[in-house]
Image (cartoon, rainbow, N blue to C red; front, side, top):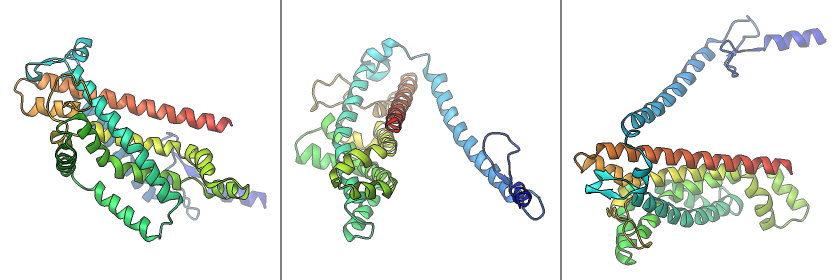
Length: 311
């Protein structure tokens, strides 16, 4: 009996001819031949993976080749001069960070609250939940230029904020809300129901279960959504043209106009002759900034998860 079981296990053994730690090939238990559909799947998977990696490396190489020679501490700590052809990007970096602070300070609490409502207090078949999810999906597909026009009409004109960092940050918050809400909702729904049932059987209140069990368990998914939101907000250009403005001076308050790094890159490459070198250097800084934020957020997520596992 044990010999028969061993033979059956051998017949179903997975082969890994590439020896890369992943298995793609399955032996047919009848004729012991490799299933060639799995070979085709392996080729497709590796082709896609290599293509995506190659595109990213090509972009990084292009930025390094054309922008690294211009990059220096003086470039990072000095203000733009001669329409951005000379000088650095100190005021641009400050404006970008201020925009991100406003954006995240508004978007994260609203997104988390809405995600909790959808995941924990509204069933998937409830009419309100369905309507809200449809609305979020429609908002996620709206072009960024439309958000820019909305922000200009509401924040700049109706609320009287004018072209300011505050207007731009609030507009960016509106843009990333759908993405954050949906990713946070899915993160909360991925938490096993055993957490909720166990807490309920012990008489733990729903709010205590949410704070002490569900949210900590969903932290990696929440951070992943946050990284996506930061990436989109940092690279946004069209919406900021109509809200935060073009001024490249150092902002003194939240109501001052400020130029984001992405908008600075666009302006140098499209509207300023002789600004290509500074545009490449600015793009390299933006890429490095996003990589640092991504790495830092991922590290925080891993540390949080390891700490939770220890307890």
